[in-house]
Length: 254
Image 1 (tube, rainbow, N blue to C red):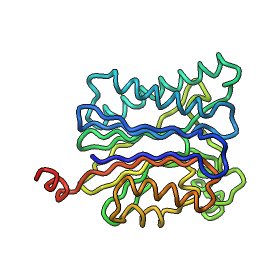
Image 2: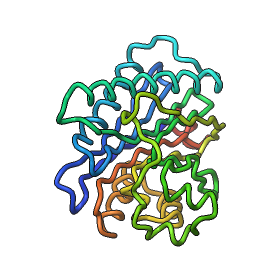
Image 3: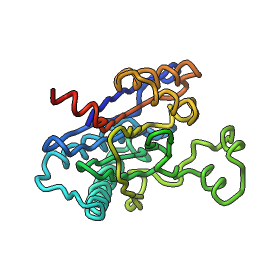
């Protein structure tokens, strides 16, 4: 599995409240995490950093991580729920951190299956052949209005409450984690990102760039640059995973 990671402060913000990491275990097991500390709340960067470091610690300390889809989903839910409590307790104990929170989106690859877990509006996409699919659904007020027919997708793009989340990690003592599992095939690419990317780069452009022949590292750089070129008002984070095609696997063995 090829990986690439890029995070950027953007052109306007003074601090980067995004955080991310890609962690491996036993060569074929990979965990990618992207978190976006909640803008407008104190210590958003503390929440996102705590989330990533906590998940990394759990990943490194767990010897037998389940590979079956249902078990992987249950394991991710359990770990993210524990991290939620940790962040919530920290915010209650430290006045300067009260009200902090973060989004989280995780992709867990087990050698065949991709398990996704998320809270908030950081997204996961899958590029399979000619199709780009958003695998996560935003936990946001605007998306809820779109889903129930209150507003159109076009109206959602410019809605004044676009950044209001319906749930986040660490803001409440309990949170519901949404999980899904998917089979992925050689040549597939997985994109995890904060809304600093998706608010500035539409799905058509995402697909075009991911389909380019450039390296995964170059694609991550180009995605961030495109968001900055379109304004860069927010922090931007991109994590990319690519399952090598059969031709590439053969070349690596030669």
